[in-house]
Length: 271
Image (cartoon, rainbow, N blue to C red; front, side, top):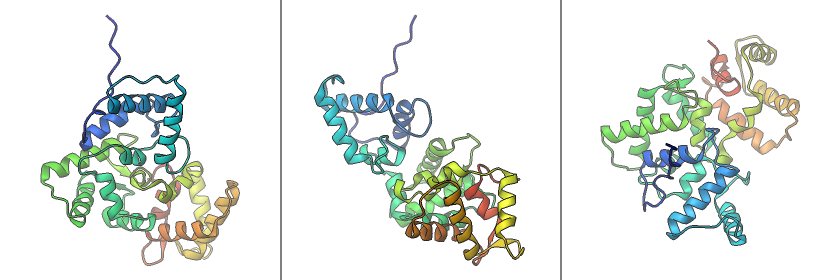
């Protein structure tokens, strides 16, 4: 007996919980690549329109395409033609929307990096479940949100499900940074230049000109400029300054040691 096609969950609700939001995301991000795009996007918009209008929608109708175009102009903040999780959080009416709550607490990549350093208490390059609960507890207190231990556990569990891409039960820096608004997620710039251990060690040694075991702000500036040029990215001095400040927020008194820099530039922290 053939399986019935799975129905899109929860789109009809006036308000969705964090876990329902996750169900919706997983349903439409069918290939699990972190975006709703292409046919997934068309399916999402069709089902969203159907849920909101209470009637079927015909994708072949020119009006459908026009409405979808207006919808993307409103919600596709970085104009890349696809919807990512932070953009979906703006579309759906989410109960106690902890993604937007996070934005109030961490409004820039510099603040995000400072928060990361504060909560990655063992300097492992990851935030585990207990560290994440500490992070969320402070987040909810600062935004005057009421919560109990059960809600805190639910939020931590949901965030791990959303952002733990490799399923190891902890969050790496680039995974956690997906909570940031698109325009603030400077780590996206480095997605295409992730280094392996050998490449990273060679680069660190090269830019640690005085061999003191850490990179200072001037050495980091030179490293970032060269990365831009090597990967044929146009150097924007304002952005470069912001990226540099964000990364230096991981440093120890202006000294950026290997462990801090590798979580930005490497696929996985080097053991």
